[in-house]
Image (cartoon, rainbow, N blue to C red; front, top):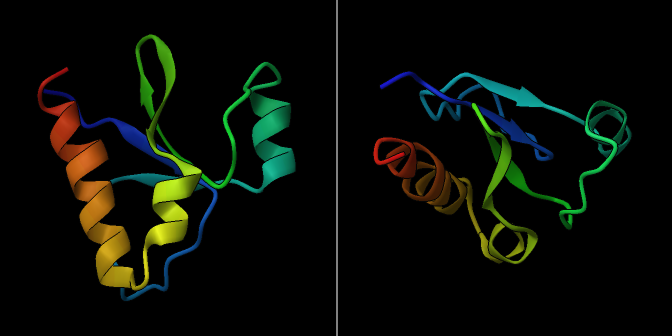
Length: 85
């Protein structure tokens, strides 16, 4: 399995590692890079061979009440899911 990269429009403090290569983009940067993207932001995307895939949507991100919640959601929806792609 190759490690997929994650794109997220959120920010984690330096001490909040999720053990994955991440790239954080502002909304305007994301739209310049992916002009046809129609996902509601904030969101976390996984970069796959087929393009960007939303792995955590805005509703789920906004429901996270702590960094621990955020990390758990990213691990379960982005990293663990990548193992089965």
